[in-house]
Length: 227
Image (tube, rainbow, N blue to C red; front, side, top):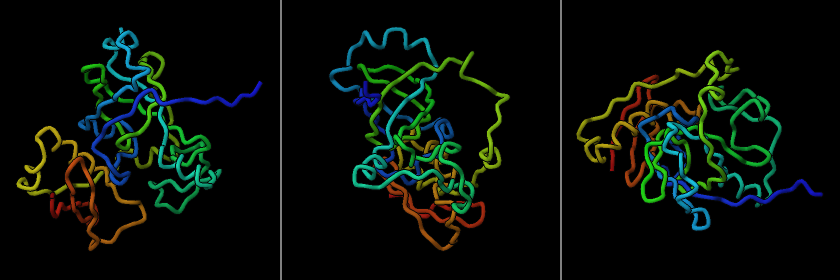
C-alpha cells in the first residue's frame, strides 16, 4: 500500500500580509496581529467547532504555498539552509530550523483564539501570508505542549532581538486604531533580510491596505512614510 497521501485545505487565513516581507519569523512574536480563518464549504460545519471556545490557543498546520509553487515548477529542497538570524551566511540542517524550504513545505504555528464569528475563527499572533491554506487545526494543551525548560538551540541567541521604532504619530494615525500596535510590533521585530544593513536604503512594507516606508540605522528603525 502506498504511503503517499493527498491532503486538501480545510480553510484559508486572511491576514494583513499580502507579501511575505514583514511577516514575523515566528508565531506569537507580535500578539497584536489579528487574522481570520475562513473554512472551506465542505468543512464549514458548526458541529466541528463545538468545545473549541474552551481553549485559549490553537495549533495550525499549513502550507508554505509560495514554496510549494516553486517546487511544482521544478525547484528542489536542500538538506541545509541559511537561517536569517545567523546573518544568512552560516548553514544549518533544514530539520534544525523552521525554514519554509522543507521537503513537504509544511508550517506549524501556535495562535491565540480570540473568538468565533459566523463560523470563522478569529486568531491573534499568526505568522502567515494572506490566503495561506490551512490543513488542520488542533487545540493547544498547556500540560503537554509547554516545556519552559526546553533548550532552543542556536535560536536562543536571537530570541530577544528587537529594534527601537520611531514613528510620527501623524503617520500612525493613518492606520485603524486596532492595527497600530500590530504594525509597531512587526517593525520592532525587524522585517529586513538579515544580510541587509544599508542605513540609506528605504524599505517598503505592505501592511493591510497601507504601504509603510522605513529605514534602519543601527538598532533604530525610522518610519519615513505611511500611505
